[in-house]
Length: 510
Image (tube, rainbow, N blue to C red; front, side):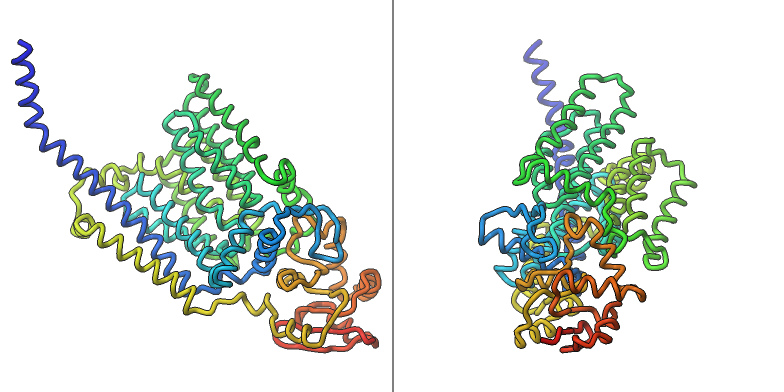
């Protein structure tokens, strides 16, 4: 009987073998299509950014982040007090984004601002690849690619050569994997903890990782309703480990506390563009997308659960309160809702797509998988080579004010400088101590920012004169439309030394 059974089993396996091989081949083909579409998403984003390379160097803070990184590389010392301004020299200040600043500095040392641009675009390309990868796990690859490109455009306002750009791939992986674990009713992957530690050394926004983990835990709680106390205990343990691993940075708990100086009561926030509330007139595309999404949620039968709905509300609130958080609703919410949409609308799902025959384009990509990947890789290499060796990318003239600084150097302007906020970064980069700069998360507080703004008002001449005397200011580098320019024009012991479309220089008479 054993021999007969073995012969029957062998015959059955012989019959099923072609089907198993075909199924495995189909699965391999589906994975190859996913890979190619992920690479295509990244390539489209890279092509767009290469065509507009200067857009990622438009922020005044690009300058001082690179300078801090260069100083860290040369001194091997993590700063604890301010050494870049004369108004707050010696006050507590930490380079809490030290690792991101070092990455920018290394890129600058390798290829100047072209190298900084290449590194920044590479981080955005990785973000796009990962978005498509996670979307294509739930949606058809073509839909996943289209969705990624749309979202990449919606968060393009955040594309900048600053440390937080390196955290975009991290926050995507962090969110996708935690909500996947909650959906599958499994413990959070422990390998995410080193990723959080990396995040904590790249940018202060790592504390939002705690928020994402909290909402993923709520999603698990909503699903299990306390029926799996052991699993819930693992999630609680993971949550307790999150702040502990982030202490593995040069500043320990100070890095966590520093994030709250922005979130609570920072007087500089209302005066800085990226921290201002959402303006529908200026960002009408984002408004249209949000209204379309809300309309879809209201008229559809889509059910997402209260935990995810609460996360949507929180991220939307942050975006409407501070425009810089555009990436939160437009990246995190689609990631968290993708599985629910695919489950409730099977026509869009990757599972149904995988069961269908491959169309002509997909068959072509499967047959020529290596050639296609090689062609896309060659495109990336050519794009990087063009940025490094051919293009001449420099920060915006509105922040570099290179002509004005050349004049200051040529005429040996010395002493304390009164500078407009937007020029603080370039002054730090060129070794000139600032009156004010972009490090307002830790410095230029305790009424300083409010007083500075008061000197720009039409009735602020008295305050302005007191400021000049207090800080012993010898020259001024200001925007042409700075409210203090008329006061300097009226002062008998000051004269205009230089002017162009981007900056004016006033100098005190000796």
